[in-house]
Image (tube, rainbow, N blue to C red; front, side, top):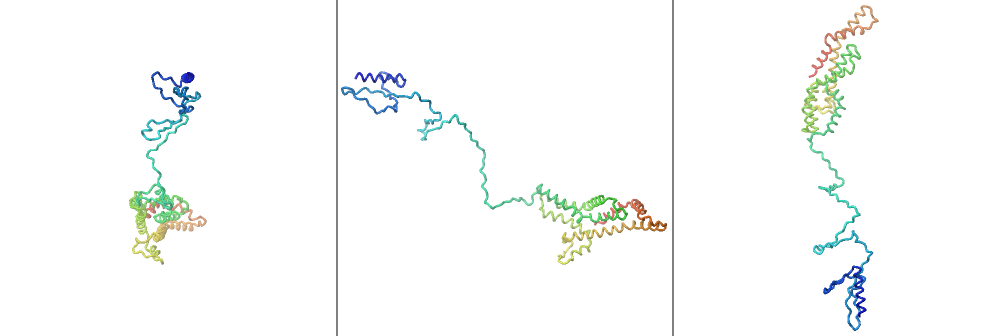
Length: 337
């Protein structure tokens, strides 16, 4: 028995030297020792000699001296797990892994659901809305492209340019003044004659349309009325009846019911006729000068001298003395009703 006691004391001393278990103080109950998985807790000491049980031996806890520190990525136990009823495991972040913060977008809205396939929705807005800048530019480009035709067919330009050209030919000057001067003078005289009518079109049709108070169709009707009224005043009844009485044409009840397709050609024919009548009157004094010069040259036996060469200075002198251009322009302005 003494040998067994000595062996047990040696084991306890060895454990104390390794620092794994301290000897219990005298008179105190031995503290329960940690159980080493290598030592079976169910092992019991063998009975000693004489049938007496040997003193209980505290199992020694053997720790591997080569063990390293705990893994920092290992999970820890939440002490509040029992109270909250959860698993109580919280992940310890790995210091070697970079953490990317999440970005939250305030007031983020989900994309609208697509409309049914095959359905096209076009918002045209209000019909009385002011036209956009693009529409205004398109209207201006359209007016510029058709301006020459409108200037010739629906204004006093036709009569004016014909009369000025005949006046130049009556004096025997083919290229003086140049065509550009004659056409430019005719344009500005036409603007002067058409000024009141154009102002009325601008006041009744163009400005209300640009402000968005009337629609496009209403603007066209409002702008057509003053021009049609002016053209009817300049058109002779004979030229107008020439087109109205054609087969297949609807007979208008009043002159205001005549359409532009019928009124424009009748107006042009009337303008050409009026211009030719005025040109004939202008030709008469220059014709008289040519006759006088020709008779004088014939009586003097100068048949080889061209009469035109002699009469041209007299024509220019007469035209300047009587202020011929002023008389022609005054007659043109008074000829329009």
